[in-house]
Length: 402
Image 1 (cartoon, rainbow, N blue to C red):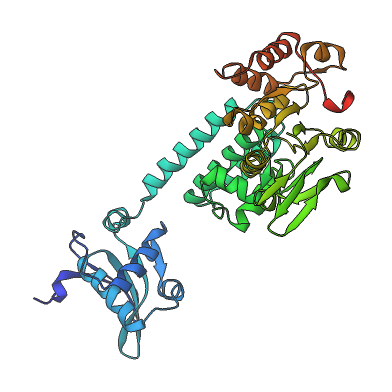
Image 2: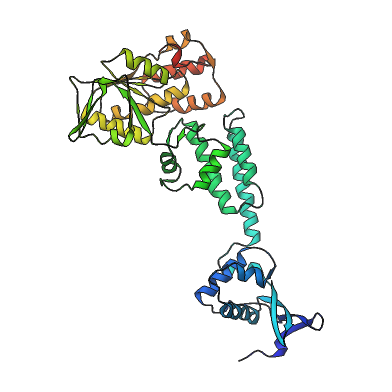
């Protein structure tokens, strides 16, 4: 049954213009072809009440004029739009449409309404504000966080992007608080469980506001710096670490050796401070001295495990006498603990803490100490050092004595 003229309300706007709409309110979504539904979803996604023909049609490279006009005609007949038309060479052509019940149409298409989006935006803002309140006032990243949140709070930023980048921001701060370091892929895997999940635009945004260097996120291939009486073998090829003061080896290649030769069970000495590492590597040729660049990454720990599987030995671990240093110790020891190999802190003790040049603990230090002391598997000497830091309110840097 075809619609009659009485089914429409036509308001003349002069001799060559009119406004036309169906008298009945919209109740159902007409049957649409797949492409028509895709176009309609794109048109209704924004919350503009009026859209011009030119703007709607230019937005789609695959748009077929005849099929698009048929879509608009279906929407008119179903009551979803009213049309502003002009008379051209005896034919009425529509120039713009006005949605008659956009929220209802959006719900039928599975799109968020303006009211739902406003509610989501409010919830997101409340969540970020609550997180910001828990971030210490003197946190090293706080200024960058405030700058990033100001950027995200702009109305022009889509809600989905706010969600994704807000979560990325929280992950970056947690990565920093846990003293993590590593390659971009390490952070992407840590934050989103996928090494390729962070786009170039997101990396640029993160670098702009927080700084990748400040986060200890490396752009280049991660390396392991080490020295000592080991000869690493890859098939028929070998590398004698004893020839030079120290070597830098790509972490993935260190983890792929086929054999390791050594005269006796090696002693591994893990050192956090770079200057101390280089000094001790020259002085102690009998030990395998390894530099720890901040908190060990998953790839670094995996490489250490590979070394121990081929050349098992005990470990000495030396880090800064501060809460971050203790966190590094508890992370770096894991390959030895899993293999039930002996390890201990070296040149890290309560007497040395009290004798060294003191630095006051900051808010982040106190939070980290509470987290460390709550761990059930902390060895007694590490726990005693953590308690001494908390009680004295002081910390020290490794380079001052090692």
